[in-house]
Image (cartoon, rainbow over all chains, first blue to last red; front, top):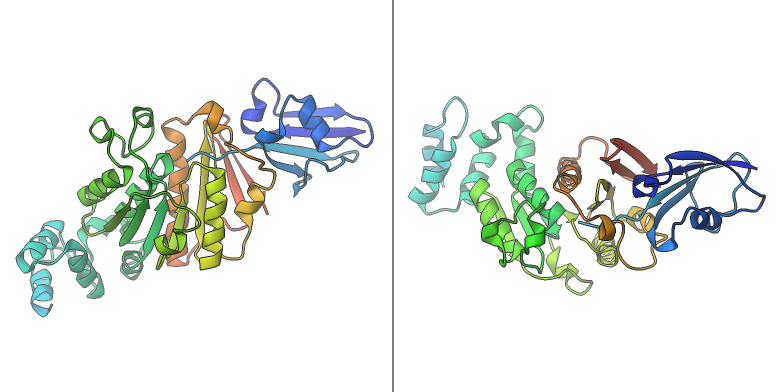
Length: 74
Length: 272
């Protein structure tokens, strides 16, 4: 299946803003995160097609996954 | 008070009340600047310092701002700018809450940090600054760390609470207290080139949803730090929300969050 991955803020460093990926059926958001070298500790918001999801959410063909890092400073 | 009012009215200039008159009235009658400003606003005498607010903020609205009480939790990067802008806006009462003293690493971005304030409480610097820029504003310096057990006392009578904290755990406690006390909260967070802002009304769960994947520790700010401009941008957006909450106008950032990226100059809106 084909999915689109969008990264935001510091997740873009040495990666990309947007990329299409070919993935096997049943791939979840956590797998994509780990393949990008990202960790659960730095994960802020995860959206599939603009809807909030958990990292366990399995992707479907044509989905757009968006990942935002955790921001907490003041 | 009739004598004070007559004193002010006699000295109006082009329909405005000059600061020098507010100041001399305070010393002549032994009243505080806050008392003079309250009297002026009650009797529709526009203080000259707010003249450039006049078409966007009416005199009645200026009076509403003066009667409001905003609690600012954290007086660092965000808090310093938030307090500055609230005082210039004419918010009558500000509670500045922060347990810390200024350290040298604050100088790159915290408005109230100067070589002279190093080693001094942040809330003392906030008081000195507000007295310098708008003595009619009453700032309560509270050198304490906000926590679940003192929140009710700290926010009693507050119109709005501003989140200028640097800890996600404390922020989640803050949201809980504001929900319980039914006080609107304006959330802000920064890290490096990036920031986010949202407004949470009692009953909403936006901030809890923002951190739904949070496990422990800090965000990207731990690695990236914070420069001079990101806190200024986010704090200004927060104060605009405070102003709208008090005046009941405009469209609040409710159930949506702005993600601000100053590196790629993009603003994304996420709905909840």
